[in-house]
Length: 190
Image (tube, rainbow, N blue to C red; front, side, top):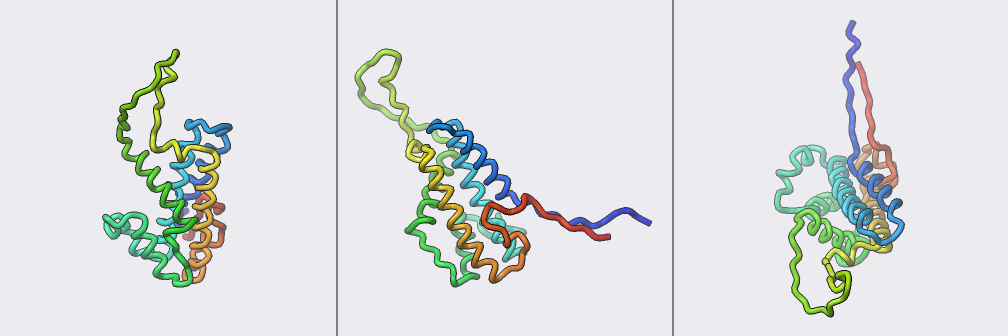
């Protein structure tokens, strides 16, 4: 008699990323970029992973080839496909919470593509080099206040979507509030 069993396991990447982002934000005691930068980036990555989870939960066959199916469509193409299934969901792209999520997508692109930001300006020379500004487009994103607001918007949008998806899917992970579920699930049988 064999001791082997068939195991079905799912690991929820969005849950790991969200918890990591939360930990980094907790470590940020001021507006220092050291923790805020990765916290905000991971928050958005968690959102992208959450959208992929939602797609997997309602369109498992499509999400098997998700990269191929959505090539060139981006995250909004994925969201469109998902929300078409739940007409009660009101996706207002131009207002919060989604408008804020869209801003974070710009931040994510800034970070992912890492282009050099070059500038030229005139300044009064000061001792110890304080005449240098080192301004960057990401500065507007890197405050504790903005990161917290951004995370609230991500969570709010995700929760609203999740509520509607419960009507069309019985995936067990949908019972949890957005980003508050288990890290994984598994079952096994002989």
